[in-house]
Length: 296
Image 1 (cartoon, one colour):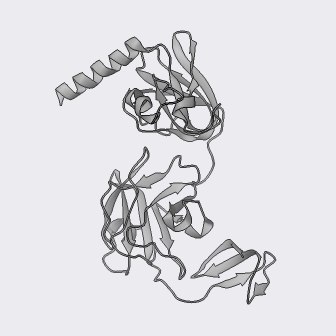
Image 2 (cartoon, one colour):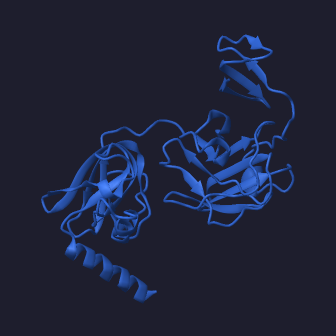
């Protein structure tokens, strides 16, 4: 372990010694679009440090290498010289950098000034964008809904437990890839370790960075439970019954909702029930949940 840290420190020192410039790309208002390593924006040098301001920023990567525009895979050289950290939820503090290509996630979406020490040892994010109030909405996002944050796939929160009871027309197929994340893939981006998850089994998951997609061992139509703060770890549970629920679910008071085959009810935005909806935006009520949906 000591040899590993010595090697990592030596690699970081080498990067600092050879760094003539520093580059950034990610999800925000970048000059040449999002996640474009060959067109990454360049930091300015200010008082011996590297500095840049990016608006509407959620997460990003930094590197001392700008790949050639015609590179076959521009991410390879960019990632090989990348630096990373887990920044946390408190802007304005200096956080140690290390060699690595995990995404750096902002405390929340906003306009950030990013300052990296001239020796590449630390990074500081400052912003005038206020922290959003309330809990960040999170969704199941995956192959089943084209990875979009849809209201029908939004989890509700009760205490420290998030929950989603799938409706009669909702299911997650065996092997279907998905994650649980906010609309901007920012403060919440929950995935697994690459292993298939069993139903009715408490499984540790990982939030932030770029965790692997989640896949299930069998088709699922029950209730999803997620906690991001239980004994210092994050866990998920795909319940098909209300038996043997984990302690963090049972103690929260959240009730299991059994999947129902009851048909959905449709209403106009003015609250008028419609028997056969077509070609418009409706409020859908099913299994005690309501959400808006476009019917074509």
